[in-house]
Image (tube, rainbow, N blue to C red; front, side):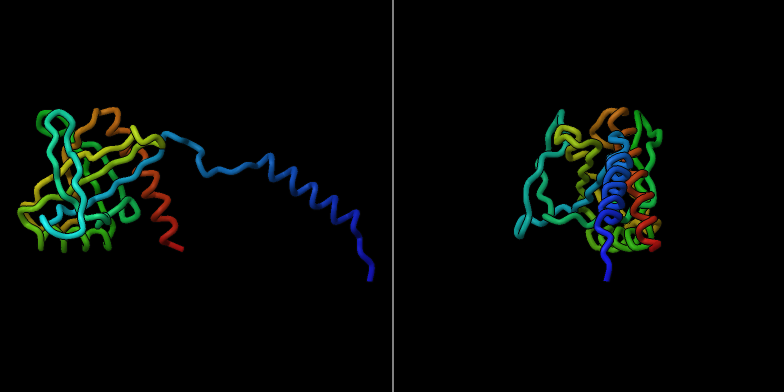
Length: 173
């Protein structure tokens, strides 16, 4: 049996050089980072934590530890014009829509508590809203008025749409 060590080392060196030039594309555009966590307002007793929602007039709300929905169930997001400003609309996929319908139907009078992250730094994320659950949501569309600037909302929506596109592509496999 003949071993061609020199040829093998040449191929290995060539592969290493090509890999160093190609690089990793995991964080190609740092502006397109977005995450959303929709929690349910927790009952007074039980496994929960208190969070502060709203910056100008903070309100303490008890939330469940685990979110009921994240950006992995998202089809898309957009900033919409609303009375007196803007709102964010989140459209969830079929599975996320069913979860939203179940929780909104069973928890009337409570709140969804929403955390958004639009960058890598901790300062680029916070508790954005706590919309009241007034009716069962059957269309998978959750709309809320966030406690953030329009620029922050645009960054969040761009990041959420990038995450939704990536998540939906992975689900097809």
